[in-house]
Image 1 (cartoon, rainbow, N blue to C red):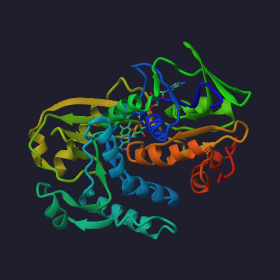
Image 2 (cartoon, helix red, strand yellow):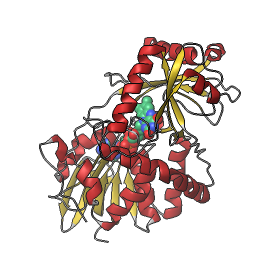
Image 3 (cartoon, protein in one colour):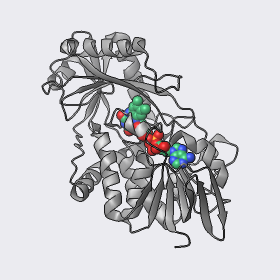
Length: 377
Ligand SMILES: Cc1cc2nc3c(=O)[nH]c(=O)nc-3n(C[C@H](O)[C@H](O)[C@H](O)COP(=O)(O)OP(=O)(O)OC[C@H]3O[C@@H](n4cnc5c(N)ncnc54)[C@H](O)[C@@H]3O)c2cc1C
């Protein structure tokens, strides 16, 4: 250990937490530096899908990475339960994307065909189903549902409990979590990184930048590049109701606690303290056209969250050439990819180099400008 810690992880959202947990699991000494309670965190605002279908159009490697995550989630859920006693309620019995009317059905069919035809893509086994075929699995759909796509690899989880389970695991692994320690500067000297925070300096042999959209500002401090283009999403939650939805949908899921979550919009606005009721109204209207009985439920909560979104929508995993030992990780779909972050990314960081397959596909060098590193081992 060349510093106070083997690894300092900057950012304590789902990405930083999964990677730190994975490093602790491998016996590394880890510090997690985070902002305070009112920080913007996508990890507390998401829709909690472990979702495969329709991810990766335009980047076949992302389809492979997503399928791998879906397949490894069972192991993650079981290790977290064994360690923390928390059941993250992973359900992976397939998910639907429903369409309303013939135009939407046609557009979705086209997407499914394009996904199938993409060279080098993983086999999602995604298929289009007619309304009567959908009704066999989801008997309560309304008459406007024209059908939809189905993928057996899709599922959902209790993402807040997953977040909590990682943090519970920190204690078991001896990981030091420091809230209220925003990193303001990073330097490297004498083989170790020095991270400046308002409450003092932390030293570490390696660093992982997992600060969500703030990676855009932090990455250049260590010769990395993370161009971000965040968007906002709104979610509406109903009161609890009897179980009626045995599979999650892209925009509707019934949580393990019985509430119905309806989401999620994509907006340019980046204020997560304001809600647009006109947007919630559209989401709620579509939901009750898909399942008419939802119209009888009361809405009990609604919120907006800011998505961590690399500029082209695909994940960034990179390592620095100028500052060896510095890594950056950011993506949308941090719930889905949590298993890969905990197992694969953590293993590569512990080894000191991202594997060729990962950095070859996901390096920020694809954006041009300051680039990350060459493929590692
Ligand atoms: C509405 C919505 C719906 C979503 N639905 C899904 C879904 O269904 N499935 C799915 O897989 N994903 C979903 N996501 C995405 C998922 O939530 C994110 O990919 C994931 O939470 C990103 O985690 P993160 O740790 O990168 O970022 P964040 O949760 O934003 O955390 C970043 C952390 O970095 C800290 N930080 C920032 N700057 C600094 C600094 N200088 N020093 C120290 N710490 C710093 C912040 O305080 C914060 O804690 C959704 C997101 C939204 C908003």
